[in-house]
Amino acid sequence: MAERERLNAILSHLIINNETINNLNTENCSNDKEFVKHGGSLVGLALEYLGVKNVFCLAGGHISPILVGCEDVNIKVVDVRDEASAVFAADAVSRLTGIPGVAIVTAGPGLTNTITAVKNAQLAESPLVVMAGATSMLLKGRGSLQDIDQQALMKPHVKWMKSLKNVKQIIPTVMKAFSKARSGVPGPVFLEFPLDVIYPRELTEREIVGQSSTDDLSWFTLSIKQIRLKIQDLYLKRYVNGIFQSDGLLKPTQRYFENYDKPITSDPNPKLKSSISTIVSQLEKSSNPVMILGSQCIQKDSYQNLINAIITLNIPVFLSGMARGLLGENHELHIRHKRRIALQNADFVMICGVGTDFRLGYGRGINSKAYFVMVNLNDFTLTQNKDLRKRDLMIQDHPCSFLHLLSQHIDPNFTKEKFSSWLATCRKHHDQREAEINQIMENEIQKINSNNNNQNVLEEGLNPIYVCREVNNVIDEDSIIVCDGGDFVGTASYTILPRGPLSWLDPGIFGTLGVGGGFAIGAKLSRPTAEVWLIYGDGSS
Image (cartoon, rainbow, N blue to C red; front, side, top):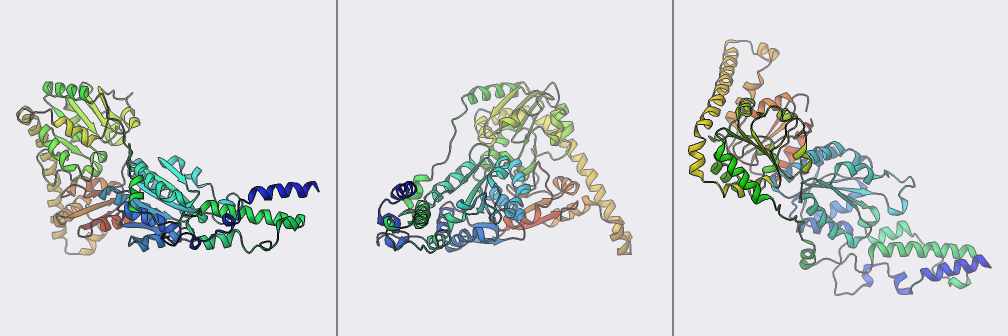
């Protein structure tokens, strides 16, 4: 008797009213409202609003509704051969368009296959959104197919993540994910979509609740066994109602999107004014200044301001990473060779958007007597290896906007006259190296012309400098260079000249081999009219 009373009490708590329990289909809602088919449709609508044109995936059952939802709104679903390539393609889209790329992968091994590519994006500070399917929330930890702790797996490699619990969270969460990916130090974010949240309600209910054997029985006349079954049925129905709710699949309006379209902003750095005054003062004292610009400097819609700032400052500049091509093919301020000599002889060094890691000798190659300024969004990068080379001034701000602001306090006539002699010295060293490269080219051409047996040439191999320069001679003005490899990419970086901004893609600081295929796909889809060159080398293919 005591057990019956306990079960009856539980049953009474679960039963709110018959309408709530039985309202399991969106058709029961008001007829003047339009509903979408499933949670995957809401994902597609959110991505459409955010300007996404392509998503990259390797299809799987855990994510099928999202792919269908994307196709329903004419977002191109690009199915690749492995999940890492999906993330690499999304990464390329992020870098070239400014809109975070989207990779959608299935649960378990589908997600584990992305780790190297996600880590590469994190270290390259590339904003992208990784979406993964997951088992039903009811089955987590119970041995379901491809069920692992995906959030624990992704936590070290992303800046933000969320596992969705109901369909009403979908649009706000997708919108927030895009804001998070782009805000502050850009980087990848992760969204987990359990099956219950993205599949149609009818299918979810059928899989979870099944066909109840107690629907037609009055609860107060049931046996103890039947009461247990009734409680189970009502719990599962209430669980489904909690996922979908009465209006969870309601098609959102434009105003609904706009309510969540609020970019995450940070307060302006209060020390900028003082920092700019300090730099202006140091430049007035300087005679041998050098700038190094990295990938973080490049913003899709602001690079012209950056170009104008560089011209105003009139400081010899070395470009790395995504900044390659910023000044075109042969700008007088762009120095490609003999960076080590320039840093050793500089009295003012400003490094923007790149760290003092192995690429810059951990900072030890910078003249110890030079005034050293670093501008970076990442506070870790600002202080990394400062025990090997101290900073005189560290500025946590976006390098592009900071340099634009700095240039407004500089007289271009003053800098053009003041630094012309030093620029000529840097140019001289640059031209000497160019002459050496040209001589290598001439020697290689003579070897090829003098060898009547082409088989011998193939067996001996071609000089990488010769190959890269031949590529440089034929690439189109509207071209994107995708580099994948080690030493060969190092050669390409100073022998193949990008023709303009946003025309160079390489893995970045992580040095990941194998990025090429995904990068090339993302590049071509981002700029369909551009010529895309994929430079493979050092085993990357």
